[in-house]
Length: 369
Length: 259
Image (tube, rainbow over the protein chains, first blue to last red):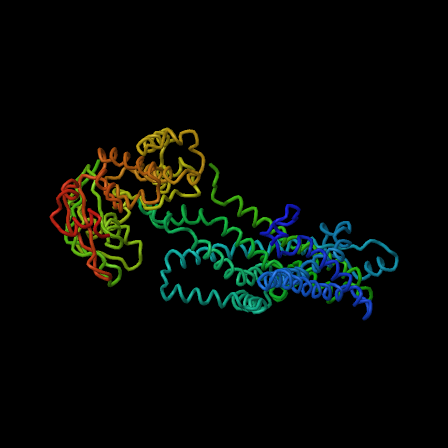
């Protein structure tokens, strides 16, 4: 005790028995060096180095903390290590995917005419020439981009009214009636429908009412809306549910009819959440491949009409370019186009997520004074 | 522009549960009537039956008659929306519409019903209602700002302005001051005093001093025990109710011996 009373003491009595602030960095450095040494013994490998260092770091920090700070702090450090470790593991595939697509897709994306031309008239001869003589890769994804945007747009136009109205019924009128409960159940079932089944359903549906072999953008849009509707219902339902009942009662007490209350009070209050939910539902279906393959086929030329003719889309474009390269003997130009299309698709999804956030912010109830 | 309310043999049910039993009460026009009583005794439930707001809760129903100047609110073919536009309500927690500005909140009753109104008329209505709610001077420079940015007391007065903008006959208030500080409470009590010159006001309160301060008549509700229905025990002049009640239970309650 005398030592703690001397004026030269450096650390407060309240903070004794704690590891210094720099302890984790020291342990990290030691773990990295030790990890490198172990890896040098068994053959160096970047992934293994990270793994071994992480284990050494966790063990070292928890052990040291246990010795100095006691078991409660040691458990705290162990939990922190596990949480951060899981986060890094979850992030790893995402970063890796983005990196791979960026590296492989940029040459295709920066190719002149990639975004503005279609594959109409592009034959294997052009690809062979570009590989053998170094000519630029010709052909682009304009037709697929148009197809993806049109099909998704039509799917959204079909799904949003149906989904939103269903959600309004469930929240405002359902009252836990048998009909409402069965709708909730079937919406949950629909969420789990494999996308190829949705595609087959749409194909069979149009086969029955229009004629055999009907493959158009509209059929694909119907298939996508089968996948989209449950997502829209679910997200809109959650958003409508969190609108406080007090606001509905306030409107009723002013002598406002129920449908006007829903239209002018409930939906405006929830619109930011609904809009971002819809945008996320679009992002969810924009990359679907299988249902489009069986409903819209694949085209090499530009088709602006969703109601007639086969239509290309980005996912099916990637699929066909990889599986059936334009020039079977020289698949590299096709694979470059496929990676470029993949990059465009990821950028589209990222833009949609960004738009969802902007919409949510723009529509959010104002709080300014 | 105010009407009296007469209630005859009213029973209120939530599904099969009888919540309030056999209420007979005559509420005078152009006066303030206070409902007091312990929590759960059915005074808020009863208040909500006076403008058919309790119907919003699934399973709720009533038996008996509520007469607004002789017209039964529960008569066949009566539209609850018509009833509510004549009998306004202010709730326990201030609930301005978060998506609307202060001005739009006041005009909510008009705008939500899509009634056409010229800008001049709307401006006049906003000013009249906000002055009526003693809020005009505090918000006149920021009518376009959202209503949720006001303080709790200001929000509650905004809700009162919103209620009087539709020019009702009666204003029901369900514990309007229970979420407010004493200064805001005083502002609302002053307001209630002014409102009674034009409107019939019915107020539910847990604060007996408040009932004594603002009301001309007081009704005491009580409940015999958990699961039993609430009843109207005694109804009379506020002065008598607080100084010389006839019922023992009323005396115990107002003197603070229980509840």
